[in-house]
Image 1: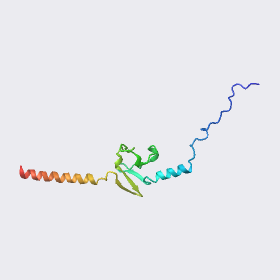
Image 2 (image 1 turned 180 degrees about the vertical axis):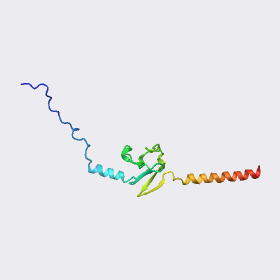
Image 3 (image 1 turned 90 degrees about the vertical axis):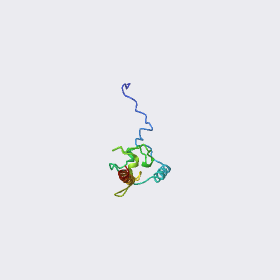
Image 4 (image 1 turned 90 degrees about the horizontal axis):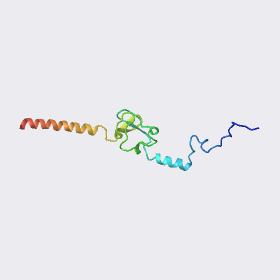
Length: 123
């Protein structure tokens, strides 16, 4: 008797059983741990919107590996607006925080007032 319409059993391939990838060797695990030790182990937080950097959402790259063109996925803030989070405290941003902005703003205000006083007295 012939068995038409019945397909032969499929041949097992090497990929059919490795759905989750291959197991890492001890050398690969050690290399990955050594690489991870080079980067900040805590969280990076966007000071503008509070977004916490998630390595899994950003191509598996550590925050320090992101280039200067990196933007916050939530608010499009620049990379320099991220700060290290330690416990429940957020540190200074990569651009020095708001201190330099305030310093130059007050300096500009004082210079404008001084110029106005000088202009009133001499003109």
